[in-house]
Length: 201
Image (cartoon, rainbow, N blue to C red):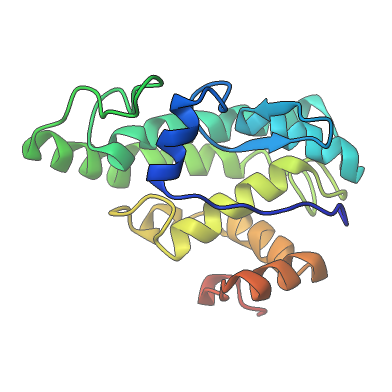
């Protein structure tokens, strides 16, 4: 959207320091700190805020896609953390650790049932060039980030990109976003490549 901002990335120790100092409204990142000093939080709220400032399409359909992506992220949480409840909002401790057998079962069900079914359902909601027609919306960028991470296997370690088999429209949408000049420039500046699945055909 051409909006200038400082992209600060912090490690877990710094995250914990800021949590203890009460600098993170919900005890987690991401946050945006406005010039006034106001701290805003929660990924979906920040996406809508940034999308409005950048003039991206807003619609009920876009909100529905964002909600579907949020459901997918929630289903990945046990895989991310190896526990049932994620991290404590107070001190970041992992809550209700899964056994090795439970971790294997989570990974198997995510790969063979949960994620393929959710992505195939999401594929049916593409209404044109993008999810909501022919204009880019924040949900397209959300999907692109998730898709790129799954293809490069950093979004949810342990989950194979095979979960996107049978989703050609989702991959094509991500490839369109990947080819946008601003996205290409961002990726080059931050060391992201082009997975074969997103290469021009």
